[in-house]
Image 1 (cartoon, rainbow, N blue to C red):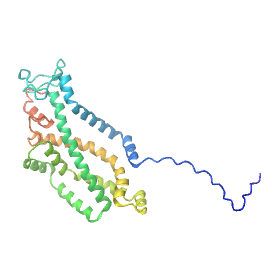
Image 2: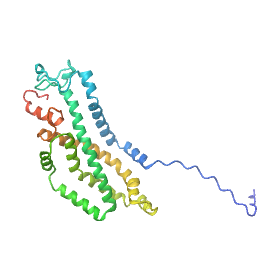
Image 3: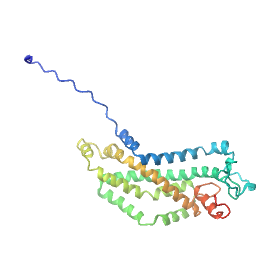
Image 4: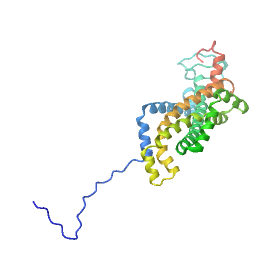
Length: 277
């Protein structure tokens, strides 16, 4: 069949354009990438379970164990673990204090220190790592000089010196750990940024006239964030161990406030009489 002639001056009707599918936002893509990372999900699940148990310490102590973390019962000193009494599922110390209750309350302190310091670490690391890796130049040189200086000093002796100079306490520990242990996070983020800054989407943003701040926030940060979440879970565990070590040495959380570190100190002193501690 012959094609119909198009009248002179008439415009051909264009085919209807296919409906555009809404594209997922960059933060949605970042969260989707995070959900596909099983290691991150496992680490986040364990951390979340610990946080929930620590948050429920009051409810568990009052309803299940019926034993406060400051309560002392000398008649039940060095009580061995027993299932007959919920308060003594993990035994008691020399003063008859419930180990499982103190463990839950100690988790509050240790997790607060670990998470608080990790947030400070990663905030500083993200800001400096992204900015230095993207801008390069003198700012990158300055950040690398500061990182090299801090990394040249052994971290544990430095933490011991600073802890001696300031009054030990949860807030002090968060500020000390967060303010001194950010270089590794910054180096990690900077390395990721150096590889991402050469990608096509960054070049496209520059051609489109996007500012440096917009490129960093809209394009680089969402691509770095999933890996930073993994680093956060690892960082929290490391910081909890450091807090425990400082408390074990008497430079962290002081009794009677329970923390995992000072509980280990007490357990080490009574190991022969109470090995369950």
